Image: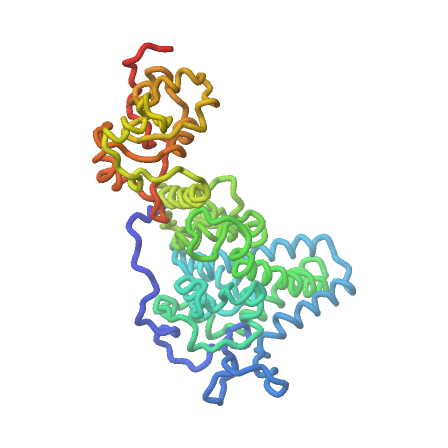
Length: 482
């Protein structure tokens, strides 16, 4: 397996045209969910025109509608009129996985992302099974998918979830798109792949043959169930494969957590993983797209990863790319810190030390003088003046102990000389800050050097448990224990 510490040059380039240099006016598989199928004669593309009673039909991609709408209706008819043979049921499930993996292991992880190296035999098998999923040719599918990764959640994303859940699931194929608005990607490597171009040129034959004829032949010649082979292993199996794949564009951008990156919509969720043959750990995938895995834990459901591993064991695949555990761990820690930062921002941590007024030592003594009528209940801890007036009666160690330190430096006593106070006590004390005292320990350090302490993602100082303002590195034991 290849450790992707040396990240390869991205396939996408700013200068690369969408068609990768092949200036065909319309993709050959335009009738099989190729997006822009019917050229527009008007100077303004139909998607930029308002819907009216006279042009509504022009907004629809009528070459894709039979695949996405009519075929499911045919499948429902077949399910109500055709008895399900148990052998056909088993074959339908097997062929569901075969064609689904043709998309996930083939179209997606191999051709779109080059996350491993496949032998010619494996490439041909994946191209055939992927064609049986009837989701467009490898060339068209991978081109749009690279645009999706490069321009995630933007207007250049061909199936952006920002346009709505159902748009990203089905709408982008049922409604026409302006091909000029889809982000540019480089598919020169696909144009140079003879298997890709063979499938692209013959896509209609491959889709019909592998999508309907082949599964029907297996059931018909195998156990005489021609009708069941067509309706169950062909049509209904295709509907399930379609919506499993479509969930990657919709559900995987809507349901789940974002443990690696939260700037964009991709998310991780086990439900999506089960629905998509392991493609549901989508937040990881968008963070590390050229990693052959979607699920990095052994217990996570990713049959696509397992299939690639089996192919490697059989000598059909090699150079399985993986990002380093360190790189992945860094992202997880950074995201965890961002979540903590958001929680921290909701809490009151006291006035920041560098925003407190600076008192001279004489001011502190005057404010706490025993003979003063306006004597304040102030104590000094680590150079910070704290007003404990409202806490004297609540002090767990008794009023006498805390009163004995009013007007004094209680740093040593607070940090172990009398009692080594808890984390909660330090945080509570922070809420009582009123000033810093010049001459009370290293006040200049508080007002200058301490400003350089680590900040969180919102620019606020991180209040970590080992870096509290009133906590010294080593407890002082200069006073006798109480």
